[in-house]
Length: 176
Image (cartoon, rainbow, N blue to C red):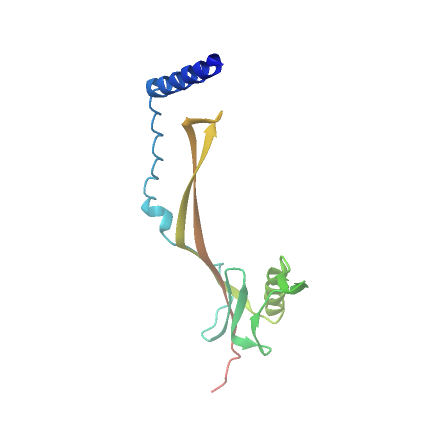
């Protein structure tokens, strides 16, 4: 009868002694910080393309076609009563989804019809303006060792884009 009590007392003493002799856990390395984004990463980029002009006249009528973020295109002034082009949408349950490429298709059809009516392309202006940047760091363990984590970082930059097409056609000459 005395043996089980003696054994349990020895076991308690052994666990208490082993708990005191264990080494403290090594601290986990802190997560590295991202370096600051370079100044050029957040600068706007604008390009202008001007084809050579063929018509020589002093007076023109102008038409502007502007597409913003691939969401909507505007015509100024109104052409055939149209002031805005929107992409086609498909109803999917309770929400509607944009049909991919439908706005670009409408834009190209409009440019082709304007060309058929005698409008010439004067300028194409592209703007890409960074709006915000977001950086994130993810940690994963190497072989389940908390003392050797693997860090992976990513940076995403949200941009505003705009493309403008400027067209013109000569006004008829007025005789004086």
